[in-house]
Image 1: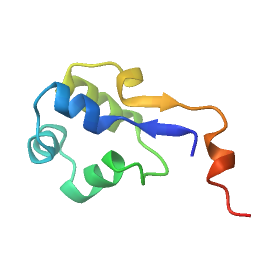
Image 2 (image 1 turned 90 degrees about the horizontal axis):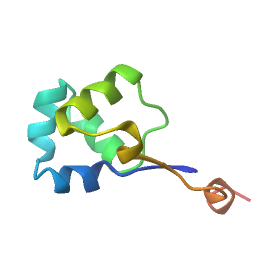
Image 3 (image 1 turned 45 degrees about the horizontal axis):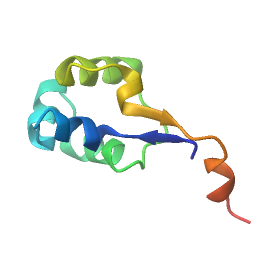
Image 4 (image 1 turned 60 degrees about the horizontal axis):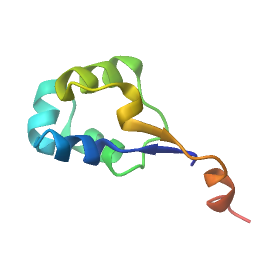
Amino acid sequence: MAIIVNLDVMMAKRKMSLNELAGKVDLTLANLSILKNNHAKAVRFSTLEAICKALDCQPGDILEFIPGEEKENAPE
């Protein structure tokens, strides 16, 4: 996928654990882990907003577009 989730980077910068962030954004640990590990297919704006508020960051600090990435991971 061409969109990379850098949630783990922002969590490390803010010295925040996955459990702590899950509590602040009212999201299950399992769902937050799916997002953090780049396995999510979508993210709601309300979830993204809550994460940005909790980590005091911008959406661009968490989400990154890498052109051509989708071609490398596509099944043949």
